Each structure stands twice: as structure tokens, then as C-alpha cells.
Length: 443
Image (cartoon, rainbow, N blue to C red):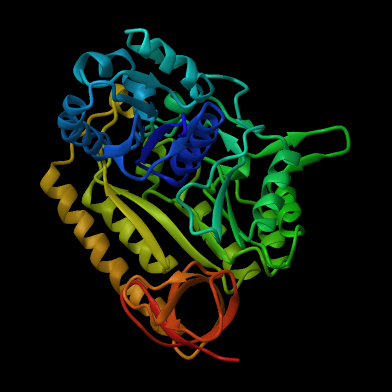
């Protein structure tokens, strides 16, 4: 019989959090734990959290309510809150959520085994110290919930942009880049295991910098090094800050076929007034110049963005500036949110959340309606075109079809032939839905 304990990890938030969960899994595996996908079977449950929006934290609170009955059934069950929410609320979480045994911030994952030992000794355990150096570069993440085709690689941690609405600099600390050689090693290892796509992750990947004896490696050079591992390894990245995306980076993306032609470039607002209040460090005009550079240097590149509506003092004119920017840029996809004030941010301390919720919701719906139209127009333009698609899996809706993504990050569904996940195929688009391209494999 195995003496291994069972760990269940539940992850909320962005791709960075999923990457962190893989790091957590690796640390726990080295300490006699196996991953289970059934929380009822777990000895330890870790909830890896996000604090970017209040809604994310409320989902975690609701989840903890649901876990109370399980905790009553299993007296020895240990529950830990990890990540940004743990960092932001600290001891407050232990006081408010009685079933929680462990609180660990994003830089404390190496200490999880010690924190567990403290709990077994009858104590609550907390470690939320931020680090100036921690990158987990020496840890080989456990890809415990992966399709085996696409994987994430964290290349840096932290953020120093201090956008006025954002908690990330306070919950993840200062920027620090990971050793370039460990990134290349991890990417090579994933490729050798059959992975055919990696996404390089950072709060602002453009800020990546690694100084070594031979050279200084910025993000453009790193991207090139990963692309050169093998032409069959696709490379994506997230996320870019508009103030830092250079022509040099765009030229590298254009140069290599296996660097995906898809850039996520959050704008947040189309109004210079709101951008200044947000401390985004660029203007509407500068952002538009970056979009023009992308379209000139990488004509087939898809661009997506983030929009926050109803930020402090946002007027109808500010909102209309955002709508006009969307109409001009014709983004392929956007993530849209109502502004949610986060405690301890610059905005919470210095600005007034004065846009009524009803107005926020109305403006958000207008943005949604416009983007649905623009996304549909973008997809219709793809009909009859042929794209190279990486097969990721069998379609969730039909066992007779494959699902995969184009270089432009659009999901395509197409009939099976004598191929398998991990293969590249040419797919001609014959139709589209609101979120998916429909096509057929062409030889």
C-alpha cells in the first residue's frame, strides 16, 4: 500500500495561477503527495486564488462554504488558501474562514510542507512574505491537468507598473525574471514529452530581462531562443503592456512561423482622461500607433484586449472614446469587465468609485454588443481561408471531430481523419459560429 497523501488543487484566475498550481504540485509531489481530481478523496485541499476582481474572491468564499460539510466529515482534512487572495487578506482570512488551516502567499510555496507540519501539530499556519528573488526556476512543474499538447511556462514574477486599479504589485511583489537557461530547458523538456505549444507567462512579459556573462537577454531574444528549439514547437505569450511592446519584438514574431500571430494587448480604456487616472503610462494615440505597427509588421496577426468599464469618474464621453477605439481597432476578441474597486490600491485610496452600477452595466452591455459584431465580422473574413491548425483534442461536442487552434488563437472544429492530437493539419474554414471556426482538413 502506498503511503502517499492525496492533494486536490483548485485554481481560480489567470494563466499565471494555473502555472503556479503546477509549481505547487511539483513541490508537494517531492514531499510524498499525489494529485487527486476528487476532493472527497483528498487529505489536503489547496485553493489557489486571484484578487484582481472582487468576483474572483467571492467565488472562493462561496467555495469555502461548500467545503464546510466535507471538513466536518473528514476531521483530519487540511484546507489551505494560496496565492493573491491569501497575500491580500492574510490573517483576516484565518479569522473569517474557520475551516482554513493554511494561508500562503505566491512566494511561499516552497514552505508548504513546513506549514502542513505546523497544522498537524495543532496550529494554524501562515506565510505571506514577498520575495525579491523567488522565481521557482529550479522547480519542474507538474502538468497534472493538461492535454499533453499545450503547456505554460512562467518566465517572470511580479509587476512594477502600479496601475491604479490593480492589486498585483502588492500581492505578487516586484518584477524578477527567471534564468533564461531554465526556461529553455523546460521548453525543450516539454517538447520531448510531446508538447507542441508553450505559452510564456508574465504579468508584463515585455519587461523580461536576464543578464549573463555572454549576453543580455530581453523578451524578444528569449522568444527567439524558444522558437529555435524546434519548428514544430509553437510559442505564445501573455501578457504585453502597450507601453513596452517594441518594433524589435514585432519583427521577431514576424520572422518565425512558429511564433503565433496573436497578441493580447490590454488597453483598458479609449479615453486619455481615464488612462491617466488608471496610471497606464500611454495615451490613446500611442496605443493606436502600436496597433498600426502590429498590422504593418505582422499583417495576419490577431489582436485581443481588455476593457474596464465604469472606472472612477468615467463620463459618457469617455465611454464613447472607448467604443470608437474598439470600432477602429477591430479587435478579434476582448475581455470585458465592470470596474471593481480593490482595497489598498491607488484608486481605492485616492479616487471615488462614483459611476453607478446600473450605468456600468449599461456601458458594459454596449461594449459586448459592439464586440460581438466585430468578432463575427472577423470570423466571417476567415471563411474559405486555409490555416495551419494544431490538433489539441477531440471536440467536446462531437467524438467525430477534432478541436485545435490557428496561429491567431481561434478555435477550429473539423472532421477527423487519420491524424491525432499533437499533429499539425491544414484546415479550410467553411463556416463559423460566434466563437468557433468550422472547417475541413485539406491535404
